[in-house]
View 1: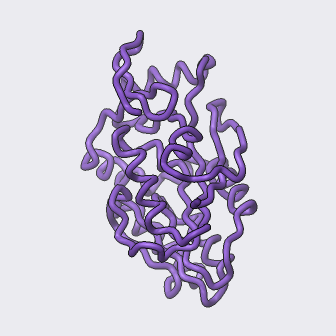
View 2: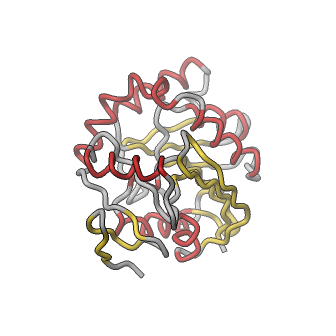
Length: 237
């Protein structure tokens, strides 16, 4: 159940079993920021995000000739891999808020010769423009933690809606700690001070996903830049 908790760092919304900081920028601001960042995003994120995403893809049962959706595809590095793994008859869809990211992803897909099998949609992942029960798998890497706290469970429920029975969802996300270490405490202070620049914030993904009706098949605890990260493979019940 979501609620409000008052703490030393300000107001925290409950999302899952742990309190998390609120999102302190509008979606219009997020869109503009990622449009500007798109040119440099791969350099900024390095290979760490891609490596964690690829690890989850290796654990998922991605169907050849299936239909796969990535929510928050960024510059399209995972989209290329998804298209290759689904084969020539597979279909891959991507949704991203930033038109700048869409341009760079389209350019990458064109160079890989995959534009005919990957369909990009500029839009908000909060309301997925996909018919009910049409998708075999969903991937979401470092995107779930960008949604406003009241949106988190509805986003996951919408993912449930579009998945086929028994469909899988792979998630990589920053994870909140009961006792944050020094790196996480510094990061949380940076998020509070520069919310438009440091807009990702740790959430409680396992609890959220279970409350939204998913069954957790695999859970991996990891770190990126010293910050806690959780990798999950989920199944629609």
